[in-house]
Length: 89
Image (cartoon, rainbow, N blue to C red; front, side, top):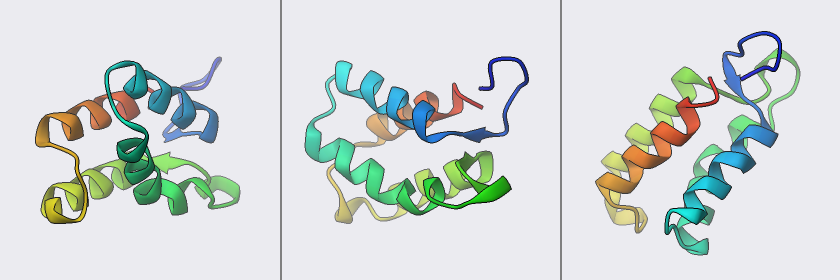
């Protein structure tokens, strides 16, 4: 969320804050790495596309739900990830 104006994207700094919050709520380093891997490309876009949009959060969380065999995150954890990221929109 922008300091003076609302933002429609989660910035790199906000993403790091969200991950820190998740770590303090019991997420392991491996689980944090899995989350970072899903959103890495979105964070490294340039210009007006930089950051994670609402739609990119939705797609990333959906991918994680649909591919539960590719990671170690539970459905409840994915809900926490989504909440932590949406906090910054």
